[in-house]
Length: 298
Length: 271
Image 1 (cartoon, rainbow over the protein chains, first blue to last red):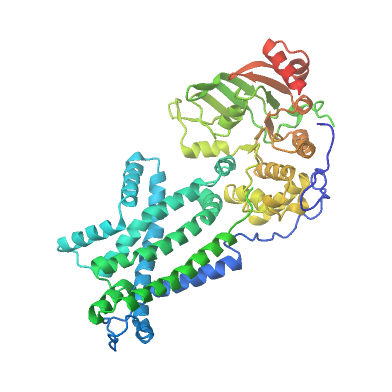
Image 2 (cartoon, one colour; image 1 turned 90 degrees about the horizontal axis):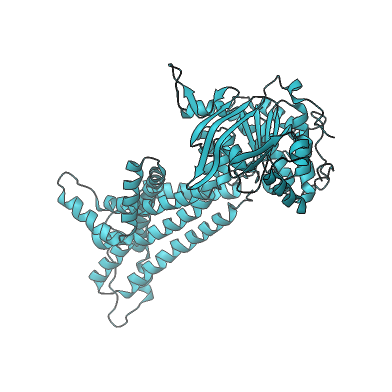
């Protein structure tokens, strides 16, 4: 077996030759084609950039303020009126905007703080990794509802902290989802096969090259869809702030209208539609993203 | 085709380095895999390690590459300690990361499962370390990379990712990648074990070429006994963390002195 030269048969080009003598082959100055990695493919980059831009705009521009109020009072004779329903839409959108904005700001915290937590938890230093692991587990295993109450009481009890309710909301959302994001990052990093780490040692790569060229490009495709799912989940948790902190989001809108006009059906139904309008496309985007960043593994 | 008639020491003046193991111990928990290992590999020498699975033969390569760290003893590459560095008073202390990286840059390794970077093309895999670690310009690295890919017969596949290559092609890219930094010592860990039988020949041919050039010391773990006989200056029979028998292929393979070697060779021949 060792004496025979078997022509290699590649799946793409069956006419592969055996090894040739040094320098005998043409094509030494072949032009290098940039590989179509997921972060260079336009069908991945364009939606990601657009979504990021949209979300940033949302984070920067606050919703118009003012109380929620209906301009006409619904009749007493029916329990549901389409006129009233449609009439409420602009105000619902205002509330939805505030909810979405708190979600995005919170998620900015979650995505960055989560990476820091994941790194700290990986640390060799137990005085760092153990407390961080404890904090992550503690926050993950307590409900965000309780955490929101706790944050509110904490902020109200401390004199020198005076912040907007919306700030409490997105900070709590951010910290809560940071713990989930950190687990996603950790899983993504751990999903990079052991052989890749060993190859990095064998090639004597420095830590920066190892992380930026080998580990992170392979970990992120596994992390992005999970982060996307958490973004949608955080959006659905954001109305808790309306209930506890009275932030002017969608739920606060519905509660206000019900209290004013004694008509619960239209506003609550309306915010359900509002959530659907945001969550469905978002979930669809995440799924598409997931499909597009798949690539062949070694 | 045989290369055993070429004396490796004639062409070892450039680059090839010695490897010296002294009292090396390595255990995984209660399992001892290397026990008081003493071994000298001369510059340019081609040493093939054989032995049953679990005998610790792969661990010799892995501790030399620092993929696993040794528990006790010393390893020197070209006279430089790998796991230790001398203090001003001549004592040895555990090596700093920096020192280990410096010594390690003389070593290259090819893995059983290739471990190519799947998100990079063949040529990018080959160019990465020269550019990022050894400070080569992209042009230099690309030129040398293409030469190496030509040498392993894969010029046309330079722009293909590992996913587009067959196992044998992947392994040849992996060899080119390891050669790209011109290591003084090359470690080959069962490089044909994961390949379909009809693809093994190409990879072995590449190894023969490297051996013929003789610019690097080679340590190979393999189950290809025919190839071992052809390429090795010395064969080490390894069992239970110890070298059972050592000598030229004609002695170890044809006239083994130890009962354990005879039993192993008999078992391999049965296959």
